[in-house]
Amino acid sequence: MIRLGIVGTGGMANYHAQAFKRIRGCRFVAACDVVKEKVEAFALKHGVTAAYTDVDEMLAGTEMDAVTNVTPDAFHAPISLKVIAKGLHILCEKPLAVNYAEAKKMADAAKKRGVINMVNLSYRGAAAIQKAHELVGKGVIGEVKHVEAGYLQGWLATMDWKGLAKNPGPLWRLSAGHGSKGVLGDLGVHILDFASYAAGDIKSVDCRLKTFRKVPGDRIGEYVLDANDTAVITAEFANGAVGTVHTTRWAVGQSNSIRLRVYGDKGAVVVDLDQSQTDLQLCRLGRDGKRQWETVKCKLTPDNYRRFIRSVQTGVNDQPDFARGAAIQKVLDACFESNRRGRTIAV
Image (cartoon, rainbow, N blue to C red; front, side, top):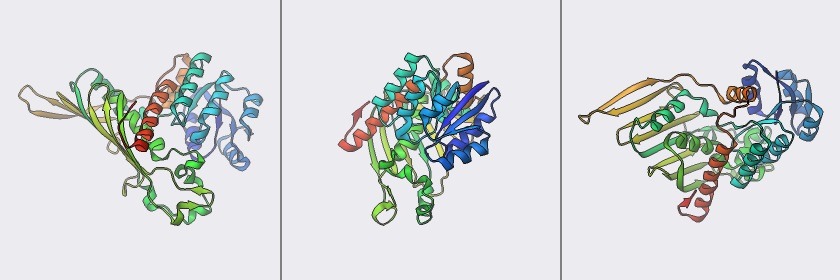
């Protein structure tokens, strides 16, 4: 039985708890959050016997095999490094850190300590993206020329801003001072991984970020609403392809829309998670130059939670690991630098 601890007991932590409960061979034995009422409510809801408000006390007070880190972005590195130092396996929410230097330090520490390490780039669980990665890698669509990828949400357009004064739960995601890297760090990390996992590593980026006005003064209580809301990236890939990667929280009518289109000189693949997690569209060019589209049914693949538990059980580290998280963090850093300087930045 793999004994799990969890740090951070907000909304996403409940999703972690439910996901791990569906996996045989593991259970939560400890939970930690700086807000006493939150961690106690979480522990009661999920049957966790030990509740803490200090991560050091949790690591010292309860025997565990692994920890899942579900804290805000700014706390990923310090908490994960403490877990690694204890020799415990670690699953960390994305983005892995707030900058590449921190992310690399985490990846290096995990490698040196020999612990299983994964970053929760959750859409890797979609069978369609795994198949797209395979098809492109095998050269089925030929040499990649163009990429288009987007991750769209629309909740900022329908937000009850007055209600958030009393219940500020999601406001940290909009506030740089509370550790948020904005939509680029929250959603952009997913779509950058999604695009480059299928199409190949990103070589350079030209990024524009925008923060839109939300309320008078763009402040609610202690939260200054200054984190970016929209990101548009022109990317060049290591294989010579170019493309656009974009994300926003202002896409009215979109709940959680993710789409990737990769075009080669012999065909194309389209992954649209709004339509299916398990099907993709594949185009092949016939010898006569005619286009032939088909729907490819993709074999189901495990989500990151199952990958993590299997890795702990077998001792073989699955993907996406901290090294991958650090590589994506390097792209994110280049995007922020590109926006500041107003020019293309090499990754």
